[in-house]
Length: 401
Ligand code: LMR
Image 1: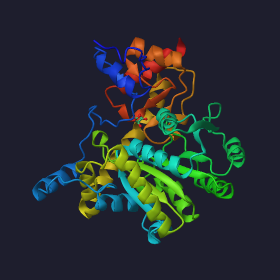
Image 2: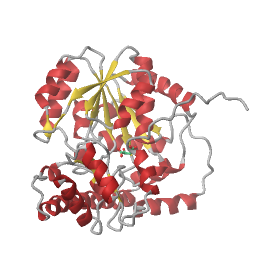
Image 3: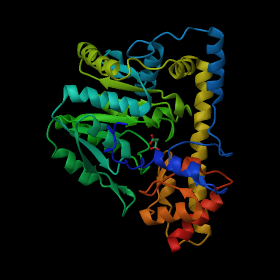
Image 4: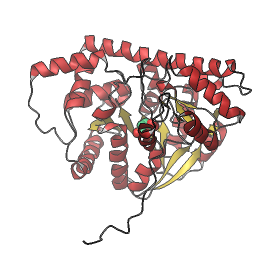
């Protein structure tokens, strides 16, 4: 027996997906998984959307062969994903200054974008929000970048350190890459206002920064056409930008891995050059993307009746999350907790930054079988009428200890 790999160290579990492994091994009946960002309905099930089922039927009837897709993915999907992201009136879209490629979920889009930036801006440093989605750091570091943080969340006010954020961005070197959460900030659920986005876009322009907008939750905040406000502001300001987007959440499509990378550039010619480099990145990573999930999304987005059906189902998911936010806050109040959690009602998207410490989160996991991310992030989209009282009581209990 040879021992080529015996020196390999055991890596820590992923801070988010690792919780799924722990949760699966937990034998308690009343366990609740508020770790990973997955929406489940009031019965605790991940929904299979009706619009998706209908698109599946239509695709089955068409019986097209499963040929290789082009390197940049399914054309009808790329076009529809771009239109949804940038809106009908997008200046970049109209001038064909934007390109969109299919990617393996939002994570895949970030990775392709990061590898492309390593070609286009090899000496830049990447700045992510403090705090940010844990995988942002991993993705950009793996692509060879140094990763630092910029000020964002203020635990005192449960808002944003906006002045500190602006001052920080104003001091960055030109070409610094700034990763911004375009809506439903992960993990805090606290977003910039429209006016604040306008100020940030101006700084990005003045300081020649490279914006990378990550939008994995379009439709989970206020609506499809409101949640891309930041994207539209950057587009209308004539800024170059990378944008990673995802249908994992909005289509309840987690395992299908359907996302997109869009790049806004200064001209049609630059856009084609950028696309040619991105195709090299994709080809040398996984050749070309899968067909099935993208075909379903394209069918829904390009068929008016299915689009409407999807939009309604998305609105139901969004409204249910808001209801759960309210019920959680009221539930914690009802059992007599001293702390005021009203700010949770104002946060947007799937997540809430509860303010629980790592020790309190550990207690929730060990004593109550309620799984949350160490940072105190809880997925409010996994609450339902059967588990909400238990979760509210358990949170109140660990706060008292
Ligand atoms: C999350 O933050 O829980 C989701 O984006 C899922 C993931 O890949 O981490």
